[in-house]
Amino acid sequence: MSSKDIGTLLFVVAFLASCRRGQNKLSAGPGADAAADGEGPSVEAISGGGIPVLPPGMISPPTDATFTASGLAYKMLQPGTGQEHPGAEDDVFVNFTVWTADGKGFDSSDVQGRPSKLRIGKIIAGLSEGLQLMRVGEKARLWLPAQLAYGSNAHEQGKPEGSLIMEVELLEINPAPRAPDDVAGPPPNATKTPSGLSSRVLEKGKGTRHPKETDKVLVQFTGWTTDGIFYASSARGGRAASVRVKDVLKGLAEGLQLMVEGEKRRFWIPPDLAFGAMSRENVPAGMVVFDVELLGIE
Image: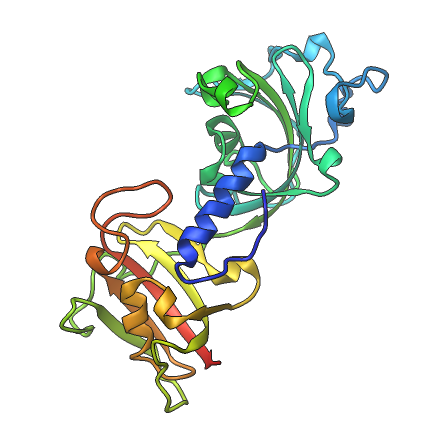
């Protein structure tokens, strides 16, 4: 998955779009050391992209595989060294190799030349489920039935139809920021503007200037839905976001102008100041919640 930095505080849309672009590659992954259990793919037979062809005996799950209620088959190749399992909103770094139902290679981090960064909740269902069974350092082989892979419209997307076989090594978990206790709605000590925007100061700023609508500002941010689902953070990109106040969500543009440099504030943004009340692809409906730190006015 692409690890492009989130750019603007509309940033939510840019962030989710980059997740979707990464998913289109194969939002899949497991580049594992297939020889960990002595069953590694034959290196004599090479399929597309330089990926070893999967031996026929490995195309179907063995008798010692674990089957989940969804139909996913799972076999550990190497135990992990970590204790935590990733959650649906977490990012992970993985090595992977993927084969189609006839054993031909489809994609691999070895071919890409680097591990893949994936958002657990944005990838194909079988891989998402399998990764949540794993710990850091673990290598596993997964057999995904068609309904947990790309599904009935795979051909239209240029993806393989039918079942998939994957080998995955979970290298790292980047946990999603956990939702605050008051994410469901503004508490009594929040202030509310005539537009309906509610906010609460988390940390007072040391500056005296308020940004204007035409100013560019440097901010750190994290966003959640009111049911506590994380969906965007500048920290995921490794640096603060530089944005023009007038270019962000209407509620955030109003909120940023209430702040001074160094201030941290939580905003509860009603639908008419956010993305609206109707659900749309890649953006949350209803009220959204942002924690914002105003680092500077450029």
